[in-house]
Picture (cartoon, rainbow, N blue to C red):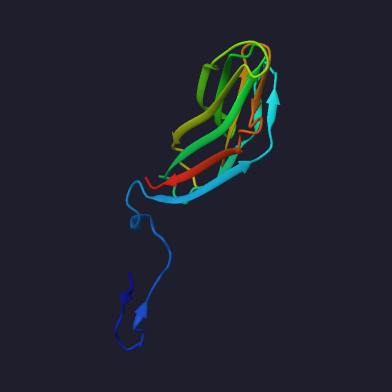
Length: 164
C-alpha cells in the first residue's frame, strides 16, 4: 500500500515494492524452486548413495518459513531388490528415513515398476541456502533404477517456501 505524505517537503507519495514478513499470511507460498533431470540413475549398492538428480537448493526468505518438498520419479527394480532404505537429508542431516521401502515383485528384469512420490514439510529455521537430497541403499542385491525406461519423464524435486 502506498503511504501518503504531505508537508513542506513536497513529497506526495512514497511506495515500496519490498515484501515484508507481515505482508504474507501464514501458509502463503513465498517462492518455488524446482530441479528436473531427464537422465537415469541406477545402483546396486548396499551402502547409502546419493540419488543423482534428486537434489534441490533453496534460500528461504524468512527464518520462520517451512519448506514443502515434493520428490517424484518413475522407478524400476531388477534382480532381487524388493526393499530399500531411503533417506532425505538437509545438508548432511537426515530429516526423514524410511527403511523397508518395498517394491511390488521380486526376481528377474523389470521385477517392479512403480512411481516414487515423497513429500516432507521441513522447518530449517534459517535464511541461508539449504540443499536437500535423497539417498538410498538396497537391502538386498539387484539394481534400483531411477527414471529408467521410456515411461518415465524425469526426476522432479520441488521445494516450496511456505510463510510461517
